[in-house]
Amino acid sequence: MLYQSILILHVVTGFFALLFGALAIASRKGQKNHLKTGKAYVLLMYSVGFSAIAMTLLKTNPFLFTVGVFTLYLTYTGQRSIFYFRLKEDYRNSWKDLVPILFALVIAAGMILQPIFRMLESQSLFVSVMGVFGVFLIGFAIGDLRLVIKNPTFKPNKKSWLIQHIGRIGGAYIATLTAFLVTNLHFNLGWIIWLAPTLIGSFLLAKVSRDWKKKLKIQP
Image 1: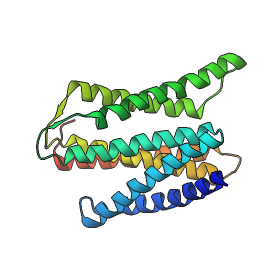
Image 2: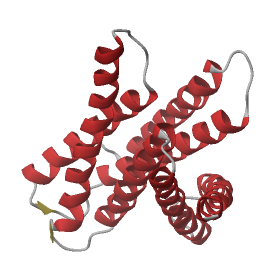
Image 3: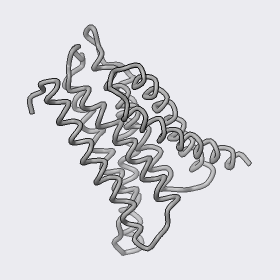
Image 4: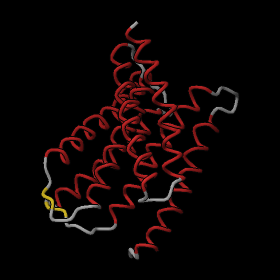
């Protein structure tokens, strides 16, 4: 009964997260509609991520756990990026910045090592979704850790934070959309569902990032 209740919460919030995420993407950046739909999207994504992890504690599901952790980290760091972008004065890093990174590093290492041990145990090679997500997650986390260590104090008016916000929030949306499609669509060429959102989404994110870099006059 508890599992079913969390599943319903996960499905409902997941649907609305995709809806509000699309509305935030479509609305003009920095305007009232974007801010409102963006806040709703972030809150819904937290619900999606935590409910996914909660379900895996009740019933083992590596795929669900992987997507839950990945989307939570990208959503949180995407939210923090816009906070840094709006700084009006120097900001000294705190546990809010460091702890999520360290947690992500530990989880990502487990996501990578678990399928490696399985392959060694079974003496066979296979592509692990958990391992792939783990590689991406540990890459993001290492980059964030280096940034925090190198810059114990963040300065205001750093425009590159906006680009990171776009990439992280957009990445969380792509991961959630992929999970939604994989779960609900089933046909022979299933690999298309895995690749299409990532390829299309990454192309669009790259284009949007380039446009904003030009608009903000950020040097490559």
